[in-house]
Image (cartoon, rainbow, N blue to C red; front, side, top):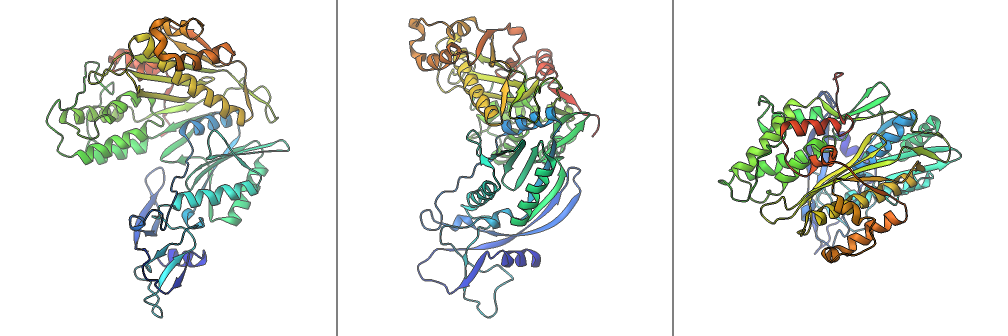
Amino acid sequence: MNEEFQALHKNGTWSLVPCVNNTNLVDCKWVYRLKRDAQGNVTRYKARLVAKGFHQQHGVDYHDTFSPVVKPTTIRVVLSLAVSHKWCMRQLDVQNAFLHGTLQETVYMKQPPGFVDPQRPNHVCLLHKSLYGLKQAPRAWFTRLSTALQQLGFHGSKTDPSLFILNSRGSVVYILVYVDDIIITGNNNQAIDHIITRLSSMFAIKDLGPLHYFLGIEVVRSGLDLILSQKKYISDLLHRSGLSDCKPVSSPMSSSQVLLPNDSPLFSDSTKYRQVVGALQYATLTRPDIAFSVNKVCQFMQAPSENHWTVVKRILRYLKGTADLGLRIRHHTDSVLHAFTDAHWIDSVQAYSDSDWAGCPVDRRSTGGFVVYIGSNLVSWSARKQRTVSRSSTESEYKALADTVAESIWLKALLHELGVTTKSSPTLWCDNLGATYLSANPVFHARTKHVEVDFHFVREQVAQGDLSVKFISTNDQIADVFTKPLSSQRFLSLRSKLQRNYLMKSTIF
């Protein structure tokens, strides 16, 4: 606590002023936490002063609060490029990150418990820098960091504001920012060292060395490849759920399972249901094989039943037996034709799109899913219920195709900002002939008048040659795993194809 308090004083976080009448006064408290490494060992005992932001009033002592964080797809794309180039990947941690943000609003806070100035006990803290707990703290910190990076020559990405790019004199450096966790990679190790040194002069930077544990994700080297695993995270989740000794199952959801509201008595602990399902959502960062089942149980957060909890437990039992699986990012020696120049080339972008027509028995909306690859590396996927009801299977497939096109266009823009050019235009694989024909057919049919907007959007990209839509057999449709519960045999078959092999067991844990 003394170290934290001294750090706050050194940083000029506040100044003591007499209390002003008719002003909003924010309280604060001390929060204690254990910092652990990937193996669960305690690395640091941390005390943090946290402001009680719920005392703040909008328009009085805070305005905007939103702060961007890097998208998981962006992380996977940058790591894929770094692995293909054999670039080093460094990990940084900003100590007391939020304390570096400069406040634009006037915020008054009570003096910290146990550290009240004996000479001025009735004074209050006029905050100059942000504190953990303040509603605007994340935004203030991101603004401060982005300004510092721009001073070092970086520019923020338009496709992902938390990606910063430096391209100068043949040196290419990428920085990914997730609050106070930073990944830095590039083709010039000396430039990276220089940037870290400059950042360390501005902030309290801790260089954690080569990328190994980021956002609860273990990054393990396997030859020239990387394996992203959440083995420890899954183990902790099973422990918190009381299922550490559960019996594993071969698939996350039964093919005959139908979930309905009020299909059984309400689950007695709805808070636990929401906590576990929220944790499962985070597990999908490296486990696309549970994306559909997690999306399904998320639809009953408001009033979960005993039957819904049974499905959640089945997902956990599946994870119990597959905790060693992880997302492999492969090194491809032929995917980069010109390295360390202004132009990088990679294999084409491939995407698979599928839909389960009227799969929801409650509202008859369809579930659409897609999966996107750069070369053979799986970088993006989705399983979500469509916003509107489709009148035909062709319409539902076409809507799923439109969502896939949107993701492919965004990914293409991201690659362009990263200085990467694909060998050919993205290819989208769809197992519905009607939707495939509609993407290239200029004739409007009466049955498709109500989907004209999506029709123009997809067909325009095809007509311009920006992407190609091709038919694929349903048996080979990888995205089928994102749209419906499958039999164990079918599920395991698609799981093995997801990354050709997407899920690779890591025997090095």
